[in-house]
Length: 207
Image 1 (spheres, helix red, strand yellow):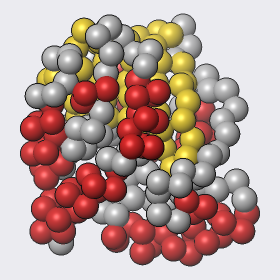
Image 2 (image 1 turned 135 degrees about the vertical axis):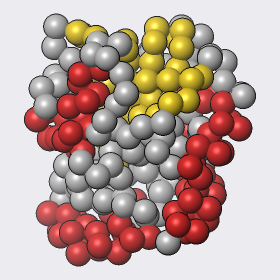
Image 3 (image 1 turned 120 degrees about the vertical axis):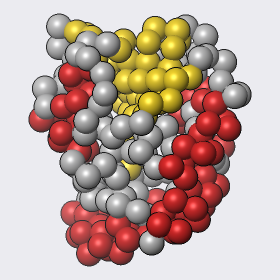
Image 4 (image 1 turned 45 degrees about the horizontal axis):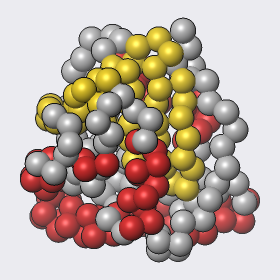
């Protein structure tokens, strides 16, 4: 299984996630970040070259060795300094209120305890800090959500823990973030887009 999760899957994931439509979504997500920034689930570093010059330092947390190998190579293309630290989203190795912004892209689907991970993101953000995210989520169409539930065990196995049926906006609000209503979009660059609706928004830590 380690051969799949750390050697084969990172390469497949990189090819699937590097399509122009998803890169443009990442560019839009990162357009207004600045200061000291934490990216959760840096993966293969597809976001590295997209951060604006206003970022003073980018700290990357990614638990997968296979992803990190590729991410470190891509970090050389970043226009901002990148610091790699081992760790998981559920136990971030930082003091409280260290970051101006936290970002993640197609990551919360795979963390083992999303509510704990989001509580950690809340903790390390400064008051009024912003959490920028792009995630595939549970469909708001009941029939599609039923199919997501049916297929999720297979998805978790193939996708190395990726869940296709998480209500991520509700989870973000549950830990105390201010998050306006979000609209699900069909991203045609993804396989089976009706089963992988995308949401993209910014949540704010209360002052």
